[in-house]
Length: 598
Image (cartoon, rainbow, N blue to C red; front, side, top):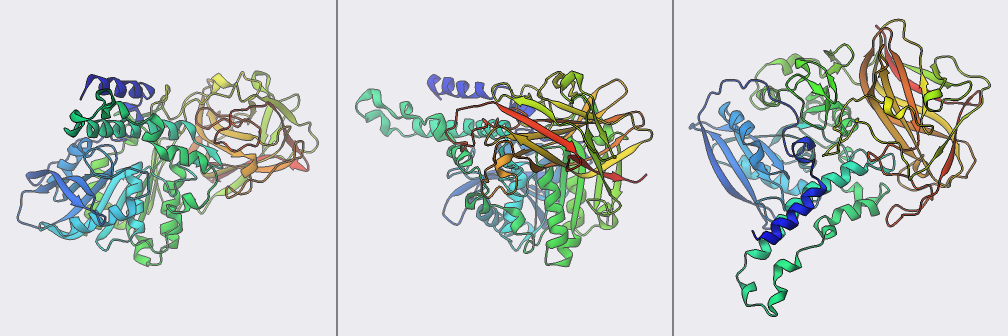
């Protein structure tokens, strides 16, 4: 590769300088436990070309037991280079599986052009059926992997390949509009842009290599117009990002890949692993619930499992540290061991823990213990309203905002000014891919001095209080603008004042009722906004407080609303907004918590 190309690549890489291992996309998302002893020697065949239905050749490596027997296949289709999973593949193969690692279309050594989600159903189908016909395979295929690799599993399962029996999608989504690119109509800006940057680096490398490979360019005239100088612009490396911004509504563009539309006909068993601090938490839970309740085949419904740990979209340390909280060694997911146990049950019929275990296993933060459950959300949940109150005002450091199960009567509203030029900064939480601060639980106190952050807290709880399940905020608010956002964040505040992030949410006013189409708002009119804070599983220990933060920005996790009502594509104009939050008889704003009796 020429010095010019290397410099160009280094320039683009500088945009994502901190991505690398911190992204959770270029490396395994959790630390594996001590490897178990293998049973077979392993034979590896590198660079196998697998032909897709349109003639495109995709590159794969095949790891198989050195034995005359026939074995199930475990397939991983990844856009992050198949070579990065060689260690796990070797161990799985040593336990009696044929492991196929494949670069997805248009990535690394595979042919074609990469466009997220577009080709994964048919390419997944073709690869599964190809692998099932290998001479040392018994016809059963499973798939595994996290993040986009989870998407390749779900999209393949939608196509219903006859030989796909089971999947193990880790931290992935149920659709690619809500919960992947957008949340409640708001662009998940840091993730979508940083992930695109990761993808663009390899796309540039491929195009540079293609420009240098042919010898014909040596004879091209004029001599200063040779192909390497015609490398693509950054925008052309990832045209899909422009499409994502253009399609800010959940329109037909996104519906092509909406997994949740296909639960009824899907026919695979699934171990759906999620993280309380992961940016795809909602989708992972939705995939489990959807297949468990909607699949037409009763065996498929019974074959779903849900596993939720304290994980974020990044590697978990050996001590179980996520963000700046150490949850303990029992919080670490042994990816290889978990995969082996799941596929031993689903593909080999072994009667292990998955045969008779409860279908749901969740990590309860605060107590930092695992617990088995029969369903999610829990049937014994008592949904409890914690109403917002204040006397003098809930703004910033001088806040006297309170959360109480007692409904308000007559209280004056709280107000703050939202300036999109000075947004509330994101502190940890559901981030991904190279932000200066990693994802996970972090102390939210640095934002408490801002006058554009409203703070509502309970008194110290008199006994342990468990909140596990889905959380929503019913917020009555008005704005001076023609469009704006409202945000909510829940924290667990300990005796020292440390405010540990638990979960957050946002709503864009013009998409308050539906993300299928914008609906105007009238400045000054009070509207009810329902903010989805997704879910958590946490015990607020005796003496701790529940704390709710309300504002209008959480940047760069979400893109700033400029308050103009304009479509996002091409917009740059900004105006300030005067926000009013109501908590009185007619407009009783309330946080609705899933309280678990203890």
